[in-house]
Amino acid sequence: MQNVIQYINENKNNHLNELISFLKFQSISTNPDYNAETRKCADWLASNMKSIGLENVKVIETDGQALVYADWLNAGADKPTLLIYGHYDVQPIDPIELWDSPPFEPVVKDGKIFGRGTADDKGQVFTHVKAVESFLKTEGKLPINIKFIIEGEEESGGEAIADFLPKNKELLACDCILISDTSWITPNMPSITYSLRGISAFEFIIEGPNRDLHSGSYGGAVDNPIHVIADIIAKLHDKYGKIAIPNYYDDIVELTNEERENFKKLPYNENEYKADLNIAETYGENGYTTYERQWARPTLEVNGIYGGYIDKGHKSIIPSKAGAKISLRLVPNQDWQKAAKMAMDYIKSITPPTVKITFTKAHGGNPALAPIDSKGVASAKYALNKAFNMEVALIREGGSIPIITDFQENLNAPAVLMGLGLDSDNIHSPNENFVLENFYGGIRASAYFIENFGS
Ligand code: BES
Ligand code: ZN
Image 1 (cartoon, protein in one colour):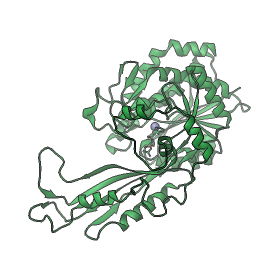
Image 2: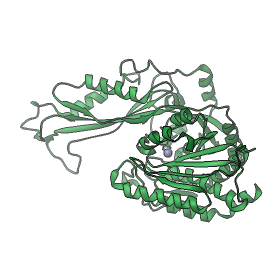
Image 3: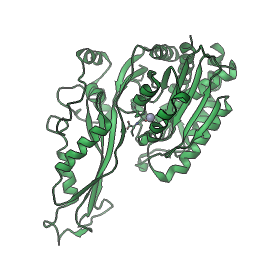
């Protein structure tokens, strides 16, 4: 292990420079304009994997973005097999004017690397590639068998991998699925996440008159699609912060008292939380704490609304159309397709007859619950503690990684979420960044995980 750790310490600059190359690809999976760049990113990752000695490296074509697979299976059949999952795609960059440096020209400043995908997820997933490299370059072998499956459309729902997985159970067969795509509860408490919320996302469009109308000539005589959208959105929650869709809470698993007590033991400072976000008050479902609201309660957010004239100045019209993008966060026992249908049925039922409504196809994934007593969780605790020399927490988080539940069911193996991010990373936001110490420490943590999982 000493040689491996020494290699990691001596190669910090190389690892950082390679990460920078990885970050330069504009692999925005949700927008087809970037398909060619996304594909180039997959090719680059595959060639990096090949160069470090991984075998059977493949860029696998799908109906969507390509998957990258690689393995090293020479540890022997008596050794466990680890499947490492991550994603090389990133979120869109807008609003571009709020970035301090261009999102795809990574810069290092104040001990952090800034750029889209630095923390979510290129920087995190790359720690595992560099840990494997460190074993292969020093020892010439790994103490366990390792497979990588890195997808290119996690940020847009992950349909390709969801389709690929059940048809390739043999290829991906493993004893544990290791994922670094989550965050720590505080900057000095590395965290293992044992549950993520699911997600269901869709868009609806309200169509009024067949063209934009003069708001003087027609105002008051024809319904306005933006008013309709505002009215619909206002009816999505009740005054207690609960989702107003009928029977929406019927399926969900309530938090146990034990879990609520455990959440209360985790560090949380309301004043710091508010100061960080520059808000006067937190907000959410009555009767629940911030962690409970974020991690274990269903929520509904409007992610964007559009329609009418939003450019500089003023234009007096009734717009012909308006739309809204919605995401539902789901908790154990909710099904993402059923939740989408319930939401769409409800929205349809409150849409007035003055307009036409259409929905886009929903995408999403079910909530994930990973066991906390697996060998992998023990290895992750050991690894994070050893790499960062800090106490390790066991937490839930509110974000989603749609494929986790499918992995656990299809491969009959537990997932371990050994995250490396911080809340200050600005994922999905301008000035996304990754703390360099978390990157280097993450490579060490991955190496310690591999060592410990094989023992
Ligand atoms: N890495 C995140 C998930 C995450 C974020 C977990 C923060 C824990 C804390 C992941 O890449 C992500 O953002 N997923 C999307 C999925 C969606 C677009 C289908 C999400 O949660 O919005
Ligand atoms: Zn991610």
